[in-house]
Structure formats: C-alpha cells, structure tokens
Image (cartoon, rainbow, N blue to C red; front, side, top):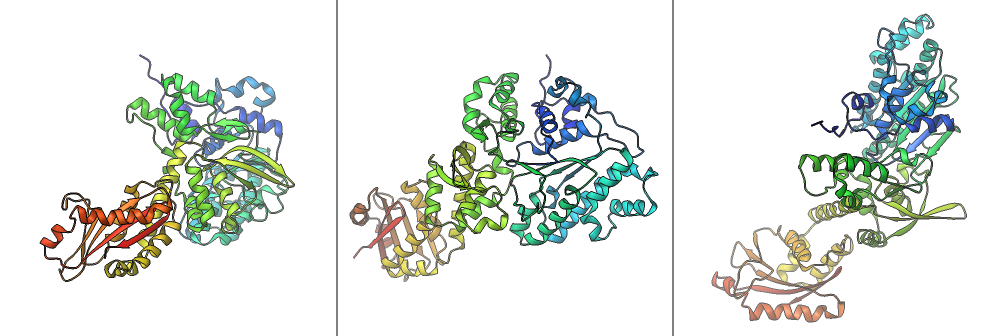
Amino acid sequence: MKMKKKLAIGIENYKELIDKSYYYVDKTLLIQSLLDDGNKVTLFTRPRRFGKTLTLSMLKTFFENEMDWNGKQIENAYYFNNMKIISTGEEYLHHMGKYPVISLSLKAAKQPTFQLAHAQLCEQISNEFSRHRYVLQSSQLLEHEKNKYENLMSGTADEASYVTALKFLSDCLKAYHKENVIVLLDEYDVPLENAYFRGFYDQMTDFIRSLFESVLKSNDSLEFAVITGCLRISKESIFTELNNLKIISVLSQSYAEYFGFTPNEVQEMLAFYHLSEKREEIGRWYDGYLFGETEVYNPWSVINYISDMIKGDSLFPKPYWSNTSSNNIVRTLIEVSDSSVKQEIEGLIAGHTIEKPVYEDITYEDVHKSQDNLWNFLFFTGYLKSTGQRFKIDTIYVTMKIPNKEIRYIYRTTIREWFQEKIKASDYHILYQDILTGNCTGIENFINDQLSDSISYYDNAENFYHGYLLGVLGGIPAYEIDSNKEHGNRRPDLILKPNHPEKPAVIIELKRVQFFKDMKSACTDALKQIEEKHYAKDLEKEGYTNILKYGICFCKKSCMVILSE
C-alpha cells in the first residue's frame, strides 16, 4: 500500500517541503500575478500562520539565481515540476532562476530589550551577507567594498553600516550577477509589535524605517520587493516617502486565494486523506475568513486538524491557532475598554455582528487613541472577519463577527483568564472586613464594581457566581472555606469557618434570578432556606456562637445582599 504524503506542520521552507514529499497546496500562480502586476514593492498583510513565510520561500526558490559559497550555480527548476506555474509559458518561466535574492525574516527580533532585538536583526543581516559570500570573488568590487562586506558578514561593522546594509548588499549582488535584485522581507511588523509592548517602539520604528528606505526607495539595483506582515503600518511610521508601495490587505480582492486555503483546496485535501465526511466540522471550526470576497480557511489549523484525524490523536477539533501568539491585542482591548465595548464583546461571543470604521494605516501607537483602532487591530490580525462593507464619505465601514468556533474559543479563554487575573490582583481586605462585620452595602458595592468591570460572556448560571465568590473569599486570612459540603438537611453554597471560635463564622446561600425586580425576594428565600435546612447546626456543634447568615442574589451584573436579623 502506497504511503500517503505527510502533512507539513511548521515547515516553512519550500525546498524541504518538496524534497520530503509533503502535501503542498499549490500557490505558485502567485508568481504569475506578481509579474503581471509589475509593482515595485508589494506588502501583503495577513493574520499569523496563514502561509506567508512558506510563500516567500517559494518565491525565493523560483526567482533566485542561487549560488553556493564558491560561486557554483544551484539548480532549483525541478522544485516546480508539475506545479501550476509551469503551464503559464515561457513569458513567466524565463524569470525562473534569473535574479539574485535578498531574503530576510524579522521575526527573530522578538526580544525583551531594544539592544537584544537590534542585535538579532543585525545577526540576520550578517547571515544574509554570509549566504552570498561568493560575491567577494568578484573583480567588480573594490577593496574597500570587500572590507565593508566582510565586516557586515562577520558582525563587526559599525551601527550606521547596518542601517544601509541591505542597499549595499543589493548593489554588490547586482555588480556580480548583472541583474537587479529581488528583496523578500518576512514578518516585518513582528519587531514593531514586540517593541510596542516592551516599551521601545520609537527606537525600533526608527531603525526599521531607515533599513527599509535604504533598500526600497530609489534603489537602482531593485527589481521588485515583497513584504509580509499582519498589519499595514502607516507611511508616517515606517514607509515614509515610499511612493511605490502596493498594499494588499484582507480587504483586497486581488491575491485573495494565495494565503490560506480555499474551500476547494480543503475539499481536495480531505478527499486525499479519506476524510471528506469531516467537511462540515472543519468548516465550522476553521473556515469563515473573507479576503476580499474570497472565502478562506485557516491553513495552520486545517493541517493540524487533518494530521490529528489521520494519526487518531484526537476525535474532535481543537483551537490550534490559539497557541500561535500571545494574543496581546485581545488582552489590551479588554483591559482598556469601557462598558460599551465589553457589551460588544459579549455580543460577538454570542454570535452577533458589529459595524466599525476600518483604517488600514494605523500604528501600534494608535491602539489606545480610539476604541475603533482597537477593533481594527482585531480585524486585521484575524480575530474578526468581514461579513459586509459600505463606503461613506471617505471611510470604509465593515460589518464584523467572530469567524469560527476556534476564534470564539480564544475570546472565551482569554477573557476568562483576564478576569481571573483581575480577581487575584484586587485588594479584598475591605470586602473581607465588610463580610465579617455585616456591612451589606459595602459587600454589594464591591461585587457590583467588579462585575461591571468584567466580561460576563453570557455565563449567567448560578455556578458561575458560586465560582466567582469561591475565588474571592478563598483568601480570607485565618479562615477555612467550605463549598457545597453537607450541612444540616441540605448543602449551603459557602461556609467560612474561622480558626478561632470567638471570630464570626459565615454562611452564604446564593440565588440567581432573571429579573431585577425578583432580587429582594430571592435573598429572603435564601435566608429562609438557611433556617429551614438548619445550615448552622454543625457550626453550633463546633462551638461557634457568632454566625452571620447571608442571602446573596445575582441578576446579570448586579448583586444584592441581605443579612439575617
């Protein structure tokens, strides 16, 4: 029996994928589209894990006149045997193996300080110089140029040299090959996002801007460049005075099918692995993105899902994409948003839509300036999808929703984690004092403030409120907390027992109602239940004489507290 092709999980090198006969979803017609359009610099913005790095690796393999360190040409044409690009004709195929290529990934710059991030970028640049070290054999380079090249290759060049290093490398490569250079820059916004959250955004922005401008602006050695990232960063931030930039975002119809998997591609993959019966399930979990008007699946999640199904590692879908980033943007949105934004998040989790203006030229610095910018970040990074657009005056308005079950899971877990951390960070000493002294108003105010500042994510069941109070009250010093243990004829919700019998013990019975008007009667019913079920009996046997009995009722984000007389 012939073994099925393996699935390439985490493999971003096109040559490795073909050499080892992994399953490949053919995206080589991107080459034809790029050549037809003839743009000098093209920026593709797509969410993380949508195949950007593999795509740039494919472009590098096709276009590069690759040399080993001794200047011997490396043949790469066979990597495109039976690929779609082969059928396009000589008009396109004569570009194969024609150009020197500079390929640089910026993702290594995700470091805690600017010094470390800058050092990583310089190291990546040095590695690219080393990859092309054969140019040092060229008589076209002057002695001082060779010395500069060797310094950049060894990492001993001064800081100013690295700012213009890519421009210098392109000039050296053109001198050697007698052809203009193709520049491929991957994950260009990773160092910017990291720098924003780490506190050195301005320094990193200045360096990236200078690096890019030197190689992309007015460079006679440049054939064309392709850049990838999650977000377009405004021209004022990075691409200052770069007038030859063509931006392809998730709103663009052109190139929509080249990043992510189309429904037909997913259907073919499922059929190849005899999993066609999983089509509806895989759609509910990983479909739902719209690039322009093209329906697209999350490729990372699809590949992982099919791999697990084949191996029998899982019988059910998982949120694979949730582990691919720190979700800092989602957390930021939740932490700085007001009550109206929180309500919109709750509505999104419940399956509703929102309409927001979309600006494609925001910066990371803008994230706090407007709540609309926060939604923009969520949209362009894949946490929301478009279900419709309209244009008014000079602004695009996009109707957005959560794309699928996988992303809804991320919202729920991220919000829940944030909520729990907020609970842990709060100062509860005032609440503890109010509970042990019978201050019902103080208890109500504290709990109501917390609930109004958090996200309910439509979990209004009584066990949610029970878990919330259990987490809050578990930290009372010198007290033991019992939850739903047998006391008397039935189980009270919470009992607080002090280490010393002279301190007050506490019994709490919880209720939840649908309407605010029923809260007071529910509290009264809770107190009545404490008495009728003799919840205090065991505490009295243990010698506690001061027992506080609370009836607490919740309705949505409101709390009412009544103390037994």
